[in-house]
Length: 95
Image (cartoon, rainbow, N blue to C red; front, side, top):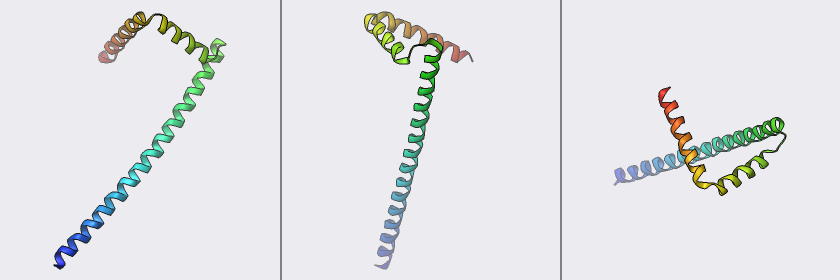
């Protein structure tokens, strides 16, 4: 009977260790995700500022115009997207 109690204790410790490791991994993933999100947000702000400096228009104006065009010409936009994807795919495969 002692053997069963010993195994049960080992199983419990193994389960606790695995749960602790999973919790630490989840916390580490959350930290990495938060850092990546902050970096992406900062990059978007810098890109928006650069676009506004270069064109004199905020990025929101460009986005509104682009969305208006997409809504007005959905088929042409889809064909252009497919063509662009095809060309980029060929260039990436070549390199």
